[in-house]
Length: 388
Image (cartoon, rainbow, N blue to C red; front, side):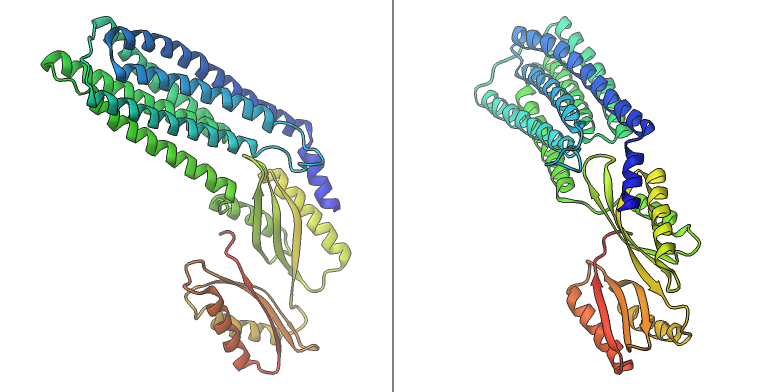
């Protein structure tokens, strides 16, 4: 537990605390800007929509209120996620941010469904709008404001790794498309007398519904637990294998407890001559290095021993490796160790999720190895393709 505690102490350091506080401030400040801008736009659009009898502009105003509510939810979620770990939630409250993103996705979905219903009503019982130059100018200004706001919020969301902000930014961008489409419909009506806004409202509503479903699907996927980002996984393994006697890093598993809040485990291959003291010192160094470079706490590091006293082991490993990689779905073999005294061969084999039957692949490998080395007891583990 010593190496874990050292990493946790580093996590509580003043430098890390400042980074967390800075991130939260950026998210809250961005959300406040979003609330002010959306309430301002909603008020103007609501007045314009009522004066011109435009359902599209009124729905656009409702969308702005939804965006303001999304920003408020983001602020609340950020505050709750920043709470210190407690006895019931020892890993912190970071996943609240994912719940915030989910609520925002539901709001977007609700706004799209509501807008679609109203648009269908207007298609059935149409009412011609009465646009004015002032109304069109206000809508045009709203388009520009929403484009700028959407890009800003999304950029801040990507910078701080906040899904809630990214979703809000995407929603704002969608709103700019809605406003622009409303403006186009108004120009067409002024030029030809043809009112398309109800139909346009229906099309836009479907786009909004799709956007909400996509946001919801992505957030649920994150809550379920996604595959580790390839670049992060490779970077962590590179750090681990940078230590002289570490001959391989495998089975990297990371648990996500909120944006930028990972802890997990990894297995390393080290010489079988290592003493308990050597291992203790090495694992502490690895844990601290991974945290300092990647902000990831390794709560456990498993150890595979590598044969250094038995030359015959190298030949056996080579033979077994050929058998394993003869199968197209075998991605990796690691943790190989030959114990001549006990007559055992042990290793792990990683089988791809693309295999029609992973267990069948594993069983075939076991049979093939057993044919060549029938005098040995095989300890072969079917491993999961957790990360790259």
